[in-house]
Amino acid sequence: MNNKSKELEKILITIRETSERDLDELSDSIDKIIECHITNERTISLIFDTILSIEFIEDDKKIKVFHKLSNYCRSFNEELADDYDKILEQDLNYDYDEEWNDDLEYETVPWFDEGMKQFKSNDREYLKSKIEFRNFFLKVKKEVQDFPKLNELSKEELQNNHLFGELSYLAIRFFNEIMTDDDFRNLKYSLKRIKKYGEEVLKDMFEYYTNKYEK
Image 1 (cartoon, rainbow, N blue to C red):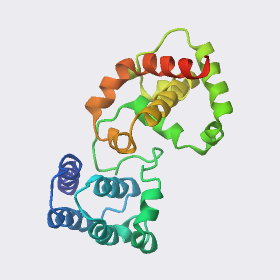
Image 2 (image 1 turned 180 degrees about the vertical axis):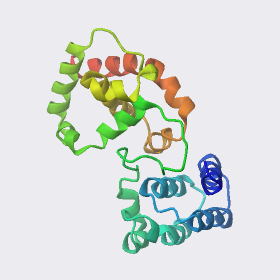
Image 3 (image 1 turned 180 degrees about the horizontal axis):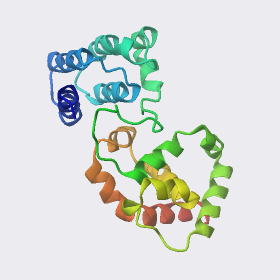
């Protein structure tokens, strides 16, 4: 990892882990990111997400920070930055098909990444229908013999075994239903929580949807 990457990683970790900050400190961190010439959409989207999660900063101040970043992420142009309500309506979760900036090194949890990727995929749009989702869940349930250990699945196993991918999707869908919007949005920042949930989520998910769709 080169010096620029180490500096950027340090900045990102600070922003991800520190929620109690003043606007000047946040702006300084963003200035440092821009100085690193970072244009990767996933990285910048992470910063937008983080800004939104800091509740004590007033909306008008958040918008000023959005403007500072608007030229560096194609999903957030100046027009959008002017309208805080539109920003809140946007899907601020980055595209899980993209990798982190090539120069950065982050630990990932493959089942979570695959589940999020499918959750955001247009291929799963039809599952917004309650009937279609019920049928999908019952089909997957019928196919499952034993629960895999999610945390031990590799990226290749998830991509090559459709059932593992579908179970990962169902786990994320389950989180989305039972968590608050803030908790769901911020879950991706905590590898420790993701791995802990990975130990029991399939059992909890199947119990939840079985009670919902088979009664």
